[in-house]
Length: 484
Image (tube, rainbow, N blue to C red; front, side):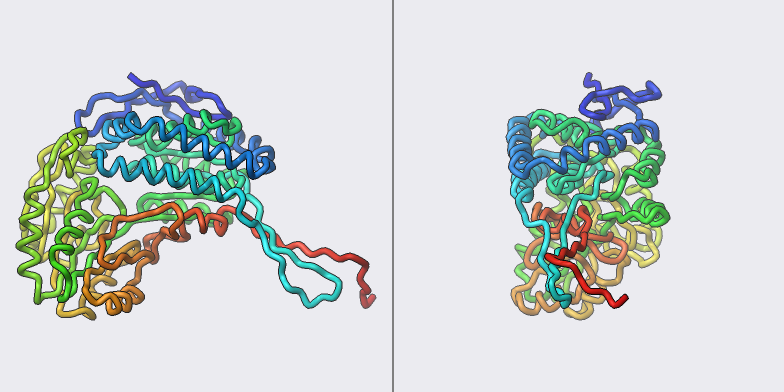
């Protein structure tokens, strides 16, 4: 059995309290690892280690920092098979989505290597004779990174790599569901690459203990930025706490993402896109299609073909390469999906396929006629459930798509790409994919949402906006005459 400890100041250490807890396989419920159960004191030590490492790391020559990211990519690349196995064992992730995470993470590291040589300021025009003005970006210091379990490898990487490349140091708090693939694995990869001790620190914790670590990360005066990916409920609490301490959070939160199928859509593409977007990684991705809005003129044919596809999706062990829908992350997640589907049905929704749990899995499920008051109609539900509704033309589809407090991502299927682009510009979301589905990310893209789906943008080309300070500097070649 694997033993997982904190990584603080370049060392693997047990929790200050001496406590540990089991990390469970979501498919078999077997114990995968024994994990250090951290608390606020462990977080404080990690913050202090990151602060101590900051002066040297931020002053390191760009080429030296670049080489560390190149070596980290090589170190991760050598682990492909073992990491994909670990993602299945720890998070129930099938080979397909595990491969997507792995490739994203490799690209992230390689692109970050180029970020170290990006310009860090501007020369500004000034109306003051004899003066020169500069806008200079510099790293902020310690960044607290709080990452989720659902895309553990890639989202933990996204949380730490950009800030690191800009010269910051990081304390990473992975989810209790993914302490290895979303936490200590990254510390090991960077240590192998030669990252200075303390530049990346990882603090793990038991279920129910996230709050005490998060509070320390947000309130500690040495932490200057917070990067959080997770639910809107938790993100709102973190944002409120950060505001009291005048700290800027970057938040990527929940989604209730629509896929719009217009009357002129290629229905083969539409069915393929809806099937993939709704059920990849058993729907446990913030970008997954939650609502499918189909023009009423093609709704009957789309529905028939879509249900036929969904009913054939393989369900089972994530280690089986043919599996599409694996186990939900834990028993609580499974019970939540069960409860929300049952509530919708009790209020009048109709189950077109699925709808009955087969623990630890939930089958791919499609609901229609879902009442607006059902929780599943307006709350993000992490699971393989899609809601199907019809629209009376493009404007009605747009209205329905925007009728959500969330605004992460959306997709439009249409033969008329110019009309689709017009609709895309009016969708109240941060990301729109035309003639594709909703699940897509690349390290260089401005990933993020509107409304209750978050603040700020993730993406290496945009990281300096949130993870550096902008300083105005003026200088004169000679003295200045003052009026008194």
